[in-house]
Length: 242
Image (tube, rainbow, N blue to C red):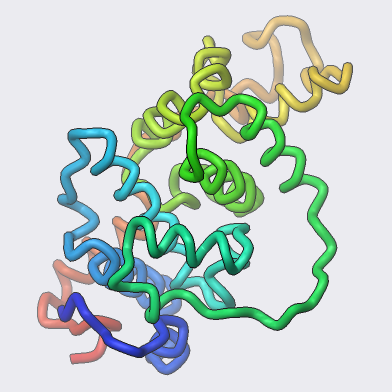
């Protein structure tokens, strides 16, 4: 793989890639995007210190968004200027690859995304733009269908817990029963508005117990697909082409 694709938009490369296996293309695209952003393999990137961890989180978010089609800024919930600012701060060498200005059209704000975003912004524990960007990005990705850690492009749930503990500590510490994070967000929103989301006062008696507390461990869909491809066809190129 080549870690530098000068003056080429990643979305254009994805659009031009073979589409006969969408999941495989998405997995290969996310891995390649992460490599372009960081120069590292997403599966082995070191995250020992806070700066390395934050870099990994932002790279994972942009990488998974970049392989889903459409503008990256839309997929991560950021304004064009915010995405450009994030790239300049963390991945300046990749600015031309991932940053694309959108037409100046007014798009109605999604109420659900806005509520989760405001919840996160109200529980920030770090200063600066990183925490604000993450609130917007997490809120946008929370409406995707998979486990939240998967839709953030992270390697497992522990990385999501670390992310929330670092940047949104008051919210993270309130999840004392280790509820699934999406369900916990919505529970917090309901309680703040005076509503009760749960059908029973005791979680263990609730028919939805597994929805709130079910296992979220294991390998992500993208990682599983990447591994399967590597085992079957180790000579595949960047987007599955020999």
